[in-house]
Length: 250
Image 1 (tube, rainbow, N blue to C red):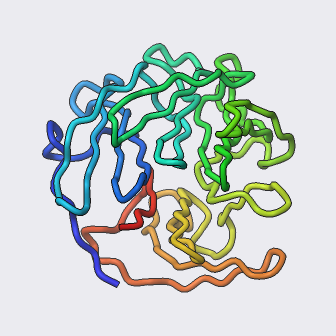
Image 2 (cartoon, helix red, strand yellow):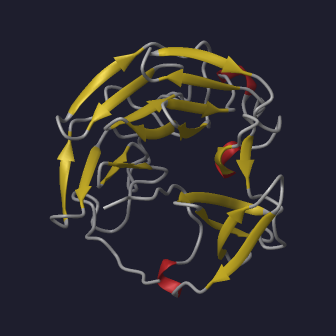
């Protein structure tokens, strides 16, 4: 296992936009949204990194300013939904971005607004897990909305997530249509837990308590709730809290 940096994002040479989101799409890394690290204002910028050329390019801006939204990739497009606008109003709108054609396509909105939701792609479905509306700040709900990509229709699924818990640790959807989380799978996975699926395994990171050192693990799902975790060594320059992540197949 090796660790390497990619070149800085154009326009942001000293760090990524705060709270930006990442997705993998046909060998490309797509970065969008977040806050300007100097002004803390939400941005609509989109950047696409091609691993074959080793270069970033500026993509077409997001149609709306949004932060803390769900993101996922399937069928050559990046799907986004929910989050909140520049006035911190929860959003229910959804869009699809085609990195190859550099075009945005409007989708039907979800049935309700969902701020701080989490996106997961399962087959030909885009799941938007948990979140809350403007009047319910921080009161995460247990439902999800699922976009059937082929039909473009949304459906609501109840009991997917633990009510009241932030869904940032959601790392997939199990066969029973319950969200997968690695929180509590080990003593060092209590706070700031994130999971990125990499083939049959999951790269998991988190810490034991607020302010503690973040550990990195490779996890494997077994039968039922059985899980295996193996801690891996990470250079100091690549360690720390993970806001967003994805796996890119090159």
